[in-house]
Image (cartoon, rainbow, N blue to C red; front, side, top):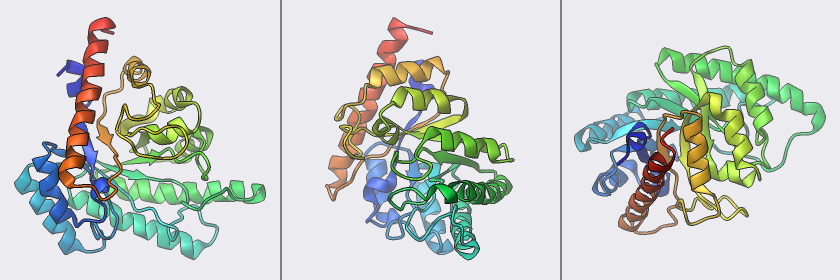
Length: 287
């Protein structure tokens, strides 16, 4: 592999096994020849409220030689760190704290967080600023908690139809957070659905620490393997190299109940596909 690929380690999100207990999914990941993961926090996969389950997962990861790059904080209708209801907001922040504690116990470097609610649609204009202020207050608390655990908090760009789905909102939040252990995770599929992947990368580039790598056809968040959708990967990788991006690429592929071996084969093919593009660009424009 190229020198650049070594600076961009490629891992996989365990989200493709989100209905399977992580203790059953980890051997499949290792057998699929991946040793870097992002841990999914779906309760059926990993109960981050259960220290015993988290400890077992950490121990199995050590035995298998699998490293946690990142931990995806929970997202559900019940979690809204931007809520105008103080008790709902506090509950949401406590949920994210519990996820951060689990991330620390698993030895992760990053916690990836959707900064806004998962509910469809956007708040009324008169609520917007107040919700931004609430989100900022919550994020400052979460970032402080992460700092105490030596974790880096990464905000993920949301789907364009959700609150904080626009890059300008993300930049507002990044500017308003006082802590410095905060950056962004670029979800390539979400950014592509915004209609202007190139601009999203440009705006987030100064804060960019890692990528959620997935493809789609421009119509829905399909979580296809790179090359199966409409994203121009050569153009994207060239742009990332120009920005001197150095972080990990985490494949975030749909699982859809397929055989784990089939999913892992798809992941390996994706890693090879990206590696070949990077190697080719190294030869043609060596920076």
